[in-house]
Image (cartoon, rainbow, N blue to C red; front, side, top):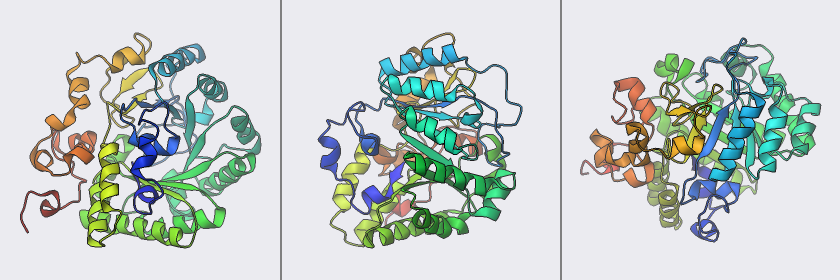
Length: 396
């Protein structure tokens, strides 16, 4: 993820991360992306069941779910291992995680084990009662998905009223005193909604928003043709930067991030150079600390059935199952060729990626997106919108 507010607006300096030794266990959550050890943040898809019908769901979630979910006991065993392994964050996702009856128990157990615990949800099931329970267990953060204002969001979510209920979930979290933010997946069908999302941040006093670039996985593979063109992506990223900077100038503090396209880092740095910003070199230092895509290294995924994946989008390849071996053993076992290569993926990327001057701060971007389009997981990421000149393989 690329922290637009951190980098462009200067809310974080390189010294902030260095002060904590860049160790995952010591860094505050807003600095975690700059860790040196890259202990994996783990997404646990606790259930396949969901009360909505989102057209871009990477997990193919549905109203039925599956009967092979990890049990509560197995889940706590997983949490024990992750805590001992040093994973700094566990993110409960789904499906819709709040459809799992023991979610509060599991999340509370993770908090007790010293893990920063967050939930990724559609927000529609967060009542005041649920929000108060989540507050009581010490939950760190709730990310609520909105893909536009009411008409557009409800079309994406497949259920009328989803937008209204999600906002009620936001308000319930705020009243309970839980940090809450928005998650927005960008594509051609909703890119025009981004200004309204920024307006909503101010209107509802929401402190954080993550703008996700589309990843071609699950039902999202059907939206490949709806992904932004490179030129459209550049305009959207500029819009996000501009609106973030505008709020910052007006003294409105919001955390704004873009996620799942690490070309955003060099693009932001090049913009700062064009603007002759004195922050440019500090931003480059922070981007080097960030290291770009970390699938299979700094982020991992455990599915509802215990399967371990490189990230939440790479569900077609499993490294093993936590019912058979601990996550920590699977994650550090380099006998699997893909796991070994993902740990040092910069050696294996091909084409323009292999020659790119930004490889050290992008790490080849999303391999799963390259595989979805080309069939070759080491091919260049088709969503990289930087020109050959910008990546240094063509002279001016």
